[in-house]
Length: 363
Image (tube, rainbow, N blue to C red):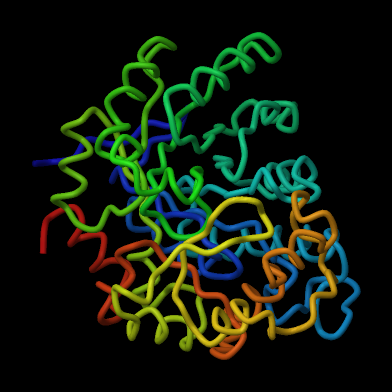
């Protein structure tokens, strides 16, 4: 099966593979730039940009961590990140993933537009006001992440009424993805919420709004999986976990080592200050969280609004900004290592070019 190009707004993605946005520091300029160079859609994570370039482009630090949202989501670092990605991929389309749960969400979206990204992707909440922050940038395509046909319908109704526009594409994320889920713990295991069941009704709803392209995500591993999703009506796929196993991935070598060495039973759902269950690898940190003996929670970075300046972090037992940042810095003892259900299948590092060839041509 030869895959057709994916159209998102005015942009054409030759290989219909969107690389999932992974923060802190897993999909930055190195990974995203190379995915776009190889014909996919590279996605820069906007989370924790204050750590980019060894924190040289951020403002005030406290205990070595960016102080408050203005520095954790550093605009200067984001602008440089886009420039660095462009040095790799040239004029190929490139996207930014901006969590709806982020403190300063609107400002971060505007920063991404000003930095020159072509596409904004948003999940971790229902982004009903997303177009509000891209006024003046009509060429920037908008792609919400959803988990049901109902969510797509709500977004389309509100966007059309308030802004006279519709999503340029939509990412349907099933409950096998890494990081935050759009389901409760119980819903993640229900048969009716699995990706292969959700694709067709979402494609049908998208058809009601002019045929919005649907991109399937969560648990997709190889060419066979991609073909299955295309057969159900998806026009592209998003993959995150498998790209961790590439040389160009921006993750620390220790992060890649944790993923490569993990077993299937090590990957589990856990609580999160973001308010959604999240999937990652069980490590020393998760043991500390279980016994409430982890690092102090100080909320230096003020990263996500649902956390309420550390209130939710204390409820679940960890600060997500600090722990994801520690993973990016290679701290195996205190880092939080997100992965999808297929993380245990990553066994070696290969180039992005080789991975893209495998995904489009077969193993």
